[in-house]
Image (cartoon, rainbow over all chains, first blue to last red; front, side):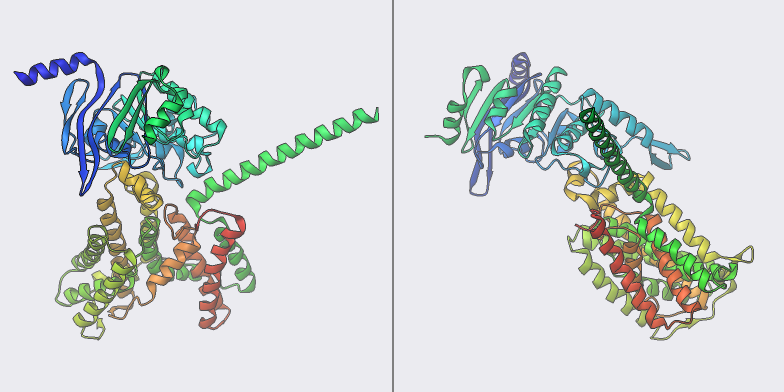
Length: 260
Length: 344
């Protein structure tokens, strides 16, 4: 009875993701101490904090890499428990890592559909061949959808600029048959030239327009203030700030990050 | 008047230089596309050049009989090299292929001497290769052992076992239905081993570029972290690839024993190095993530044609060693010169 009431209360909250009272310890280190973290539908949330503040641990828990010691995770109002990254992905949560996890000597289309290649079956299902034509078409469609300009989906990823590679990583996050609801981006603008940064930020706006939420982890506050609706600050494993972007400014955020 | 003329000249120069840069970029892209499937272009060109030069120097080279001989001699190393290509693309290495070749042939031979039919003997031999590959794969994937160490260990184990089982001697005298494998000639001319080699190469090419196994092999070799993050079954792929290498080494051993009508526990010594050389000359990167079966095929043919040519020209076999070593180094240096990103 109590659980049903709780669930109804959680559903009426209307959030996409609600992480409640998350605790996580590694040996002697308490990485997260009672963190609440919420993401609404179609919202871009900036997650900031110094190194060791707990950002990546929090995200690893959200993507099913770790299980929290204490605390609960609700996805669209329903209590979930991730046993593996697959569980999290199945609910539409996609993560793009800082190093992009791309196979640089492979072509763009193959990278976008890595692990999810479209197949054609022959000999009564015995032989499954990668349907390259379908893959190239679908890859091109995704890139067009995101308004990304790449000469050819057959290009090797190492020939692309940093911003284009980031775009390919984003396209991969969208290539699942399960429409992603949330994309977590870890330092997407870190190693990019100014012009490329603009393109990536535009991509994030594109995602928002498609009603996909984004968690934007970054040390670059100007970029956070450019695209995010809300900013969450972690320090020493605790949440020390959670404000709509319009109600705060960079100085305040820096003070929260550094503390004291 | 003069000023206008100069402006036009500058404009046309700028246009033509942009056009030149664009065509160079297009040529580079086409070359990269071609090399993706054919391997190092220079190797192919070198092979063609070699064929031309040798045929000019000796008329015997181009005769059908000689060509068939070349194919026959390269087929065993070629089959082993196809397996090695997969392993190297996956950023691994298999030093045990020579020993597995011997062990498989010795065990198969023992069973053949007990009277089993040829086909059964062949299946047993292939099974031995698969088992050795499985062992390698388990030690490497589950045991988290570096491939160099794991396969170096298997190299010793398999060789030792081969010597033990054969009691240090060769096992000879096989039934006709086994000898067919190494000694039959299709249409009186094409040696069966050569056909087997070409079929294995074709199958390997298909697996590499058209199936998930191949795609994942390339991905693991390119960026294992990316493979892990996208949920690719890394351990399963590694096991499969090492089993392929072991099985193909065994196939090579069976063909070899069937040609000689004798299984020697000392067979295949040094074959791992010949296979690796062929793979690298053919354009596959030792760092993994990129390569082609066709490239290996051309690499194998280059080495085979080189040996055959030098033989026909009555050059000492010791010089062949030197030539092949130079070809290997030359091939890799060529990448540096071209600025090709193959060896990191």
